[in-house]
View 1 (cartoon, helix red, strand yellow):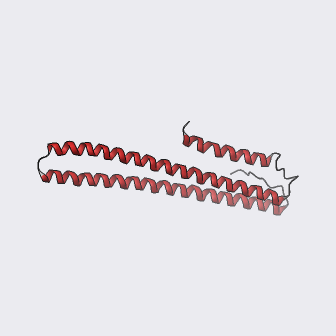
View 2 (view 1 turned 180 degrees about the horizontal axis):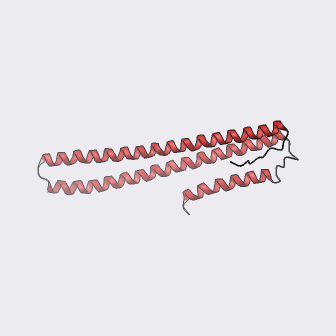
View 3 (view 1 turned 90 degrees about the horizontal axis):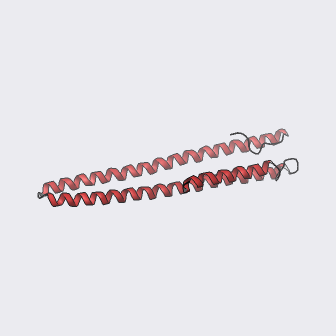
Length: 158
């Protein structure tokens, strides 16, 4: 199991254990005032958001490291090819054309990597916004249940 997989699994297990403890014993709604239940729910929602932020930060860090390695490999390969080409090529026009092609290849690689990074950031923004919306809905459902005088569900079905 790689590091990224562990980081995705552990917070989910921890969060579900936390909600399970809140729901089954540690904070039974029959014994604890509604205001305290709401505080516990808000704390668990904040923890869930922090976990997501942490996972996304690690994901971006790993992506950047991967891209750095890919760019380094590209530069190393291109340098070897360029040296070999320059040994064979004798005319300046051939060398200039090769350098222009190399610069275009490098520019397209950099653009691809930047697009990949931006795409990942956009995906993360969508996930974060989705979680925020879900948490707002869960909190409003909780508050509505309290207003109706019902026992609020701390971990409603998503």
